[in-house]
Length: 511
Ligand SMILES: Nc1ncnc2c1ncn2[C@@H]1O[C@H](COP(=O)(O)OP(=O)(O)OP(=O)(O)O)[C@@H](O)[C@H]1O
Ligand SMILES: [Mg+2]
Image 1 (cartoon, rainbow, N blue to C red):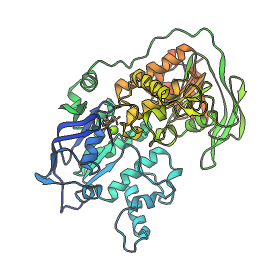
Image 2: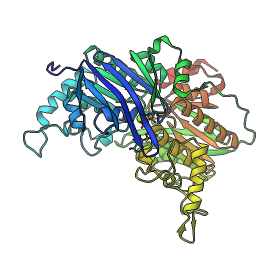
Image 3: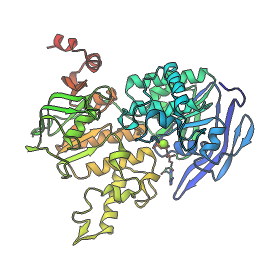
Image 4: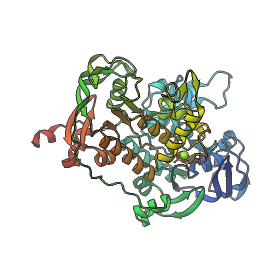
């Protein structure tokens, strides 16, 4: 690495930042050293991203100072941050979909022949870096065709390309499958050994324990404390974070009596975005009053399955029926289908719209929100306020644009909207991705409540632990097929692990 401007310590002192209606950072002191991974933990809206955006020059603090190696610095832009060796991977990707992986990496770097990018020399370095860090990325792949996991690696590659000395990773594992997350964690440790400093934000306590040297807990914009996560119990960390005890164990439930087949899928075939088979002759039935969990490593057909059911993807063979009606296009009936998509930014929210507009997005043309062609704002606001309260959406009011909310609170807006119409069938893809522990607990409770009311729920998650907590039945997907359909009450976790890897032998052994 370039030794000329090495970063040994970075200190933020007395940082405060107010947004309309919220004190996002309240006199925060924070320090990170080279060779260390420093974690930040905190509820949705606690102020983690805000603090990091200040460090990266995207926000200016109202007060407070930043010191690099003891010397005061002003960071007025991401470019200034980059010049100081600070790089950030954002909670929500900033890649340009229509460009290739290589073009995205090179974009923004100085070029010899503007406006053209210097792609050829960059290609070599791209290949060197991917080899060095064992990343399976092809320079020429367009970004839209990459699975989210690869997009995440690409964001990291961008920082390596710029030789960042301080890497800010804002929930980098939220979109990764367990195996990919493991690779990321060990790469993060390696970055530290190389003498870089890393700030690592995550809601997952296990990861924190594995990767960080110390963790700072934020609540409501202020620092609760900095601890070594290996020396405190998980329950204690959760306590510090949420301010109360959190329960994520399997919830008791009574069997639902009036079971009817709501979702019936027969011999379903479809292709993925690269026109390769994504689903192979899938048969699946989900009944009212049951949660069917879909376990599997990301990219084994889960996304395509959800998209076929919701009518967003054409299938090439087989049939799907919801309440006996064949699916043959996008479903607009919000009482028939609720859909929590895996990517809230692309398909879940209109970011420039307000919280209330997003909450009412699918029903605003109906009574009582529109009467004789006139939008009834009063009704909309009342409904929105009720949902904000019921789903504990942390926002100053219903009229702020949804992109001003923290990531987890944006997710709660989608969940609230999709559950509020009491759909017969609910498809939820990674609904707790990016949520803090307290919010995960409440989403689980909401889904259970839907199930107990009689909704048929398909619950897709790459977090095996929450599939186990929440499901009545579990199916495991591998390579576009359903490997097994198991009773969640009596399930053998090792068997699921084997099925996730495509090994069916264990299944034949059990009756
Ligand atoms: N650009 C903005 N305009 C107005 N308010 C904002 C803006 N950015 C953040 N906020 C508010 O500041 C608070 C802190 O948000 P921040 O994004 O820092 O939380 P976070 O800890 O990263 O949460 P999460 O875990 O959900 O990502 C929240 O109340 C949020 O609504
Ligand atoms: Mg955040």
